[in-house]
Image (tube, rainbow, N blue to C red; front, top):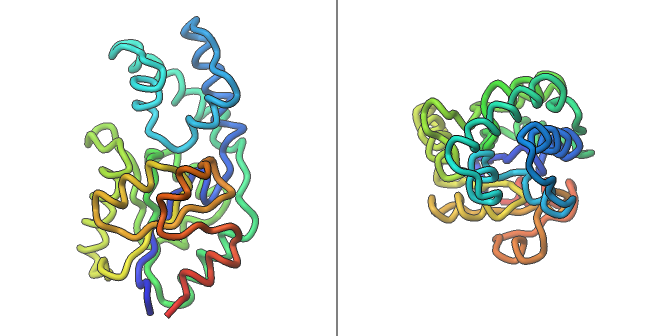
Length: 217
C-alpha cells in the first residue's frame, strides 16, 4: 500500500462551491460599498482562507477585513453553503478509499460549522476519520495550519502519517503540503490553473485516475 492516509481538500476538490461563494462575495462587497471584483478574480477566491482573500488579495485594513468576514459568514450560512454541487464520482472515490482500509481526513480552509453544513447535506462526512478544518478561535487559518492540526489529530488516532498524500486543487494545497513534506496531487476540475498544477507531484484529470493513484501499491 503506497498511501495509507489520504488528506482531502474540500472546495474545488470534493464540491464545486463556486456559485454560492461568488454570490456571498458579491453581497459582501456590496454591503461594504466597494467595487465588485471581476469573475476572474472571484475564481481565485475559491479555496484560500477568507482572511487572506480580504486582507491580502483585496488589501482591506484589519477592521474592514473583520467586518467583511462577519458579513460573508452570515451570508454563507444563511444562503451560500448549499448553493454547491458535488463533483461527479469524487465521493465514490473517497468511499472506495475508505473501503480499502485507508484513513481519510478532510484538510480544508473552511471552518467546522460550514464544513458540517455542507458535509451533512451532501452526506459524505461519515467517510472521514478526522475533520481537519480552519478555526479562527485557534488562529488556524492557512492550509499549513489546517494540515498541522489534521496531522496531529491523525497521529493521536494512530493513523499512518508516513504513507500519506494530500488531494487538492490550488496553490495553497501545494504550499501547505510542501511545508509538511507531503506528497500532493492537484485535480484539474477545481479552481487551479496550469502553473499551479505544474508544481504538484501528480496532476489528476478524472475521478478514475484519482482512484488509481490512491489505490496504487
